[in-house]
Amino acid sequence: MSKQTAFLFDLDGVIIDTEPQYDIFWSKAAEKYRLGIDHFEQIIKGTTLPNILDKYFSHFPEEKQKEVVKAIQDFELQMEILPIPGALEFLNHLRKENKKTGLVTSSDDKKLEYVFRKLPIRHYFDTVVSADRITQGKPNPMCYLLAAKDLGIAPEDCYVFEDSINGIKAGNAAGMKVIGLSTTLPAERIQDNCMAVLPDFLKIPAIL
Image: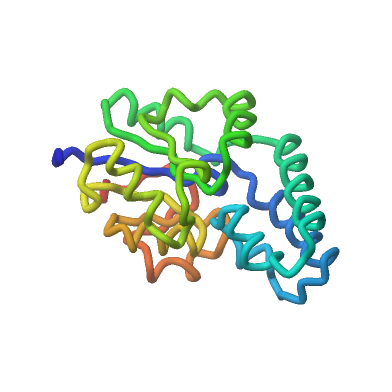
């Protein structure tokens, strides 16, 4: 393993500002299917769709589960894709400095294809770990450990940028340095489990 530093990024709420759109979708879904779970849209942040179905929709008939899958897939292919302030500039800076980078997301490849068409950022990442490459989603560290392995970088030499509780747990469980983005949750909700918390990428502190 090289001692070079790597920078690993979650997608939604870190690179792109889509979490408010997901909040609306999942809040309505919880109401429609009468899940009876307060703040359901917050609880599932950073979770892969298969894990959401397995944990919260497994008691529904298969046809209902397929209905949920189709609804979220249709929704994701109509989302507005806007970057978090400063994200593209930071990624460009890392690329110019020849830093190793990875995208580590709970989204599947179909959603990523849509995102990359709307916002051409694939070239910024040396590796991409999507939901289709893992069997255990966040908060399990599998996704981040796979990204580190792809890059040939030791986990302790990786910085993780995350906005969700599940994502932060995954980064910490992987033994990485976690930096929180307060784009989805208030800084006070995540600061105890991050080495630093930033509102966006406009001012990257000297800790890096």
